[in-house]
Image (tube, rainbow over all chains, first blue to last red; front, side, top):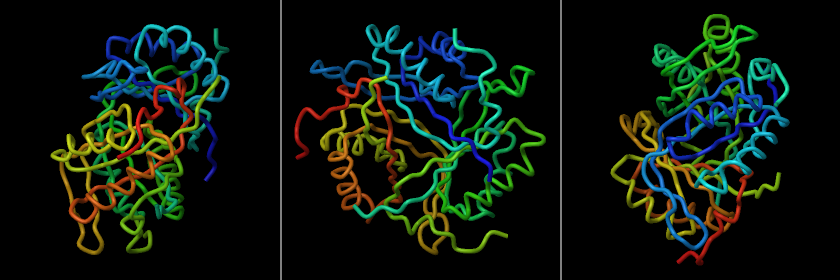
Length: 106
Length: 106
Length: 106
């Protein structure tokens, strides 16, 4: 099959951040996303649990340039204040053209 | 640990397609799957949002031959009509024998 | 971006095992996790469906040593009795220090 190598970006965050994170993903090139509710627990340095309870897991498939832009943005604007986590995995996608950026990241 | 290299296939689709997609996965060699509800938004060409709202994320771990067969099947039977997306990731699985096909894809 | 290579460990199991699995993940070095509800179906040898219905998907990001310890533990204590599945994927994580173990696995 003809697949395209792209990046699956996953963000876990408190649910109040959902609409803001989605807007940021789109601004940096994501053309789609899924959100699902998760429970969980995370750690912050030596302070023990930082977030606990209902959260969202937000996933988007993007190209490398968008992934970089999203990482940069989340690092600057979320990490200092929120217990957000972000990770990347390479994926092979069918219909890769659906995920191509239609405009440069602003 | 003794792990087996297999493929995690993920399909995001509208929820009415669930039972049909599960039947197709099984027919092409998947011996198990998980489904979870997701919200989301996807893009189609320049037309903007194509699907929006409640969807399912369907995951199955399969061997390479089944992954190819499922990609082929979804491309032919879903992509022309539905906003389905499909992507593949390599995974290392414990108890790999549980995921082996018991019959050839029809 | 400065990312850390870690391992995303995913466990699918019946929901009664949730608190026990979480305790085991933590004991073997996981400092956070997410849980989401999934439906699904799995196979066991030639006996057909082994589990069916509501289950949990438990995910944690850990280092290689913790991943090994968790695989070993789940293999010994869950696989003989439960229809649990476990798989591993490499991930690139931002703020990798958040996932570092604070104590050796017991």
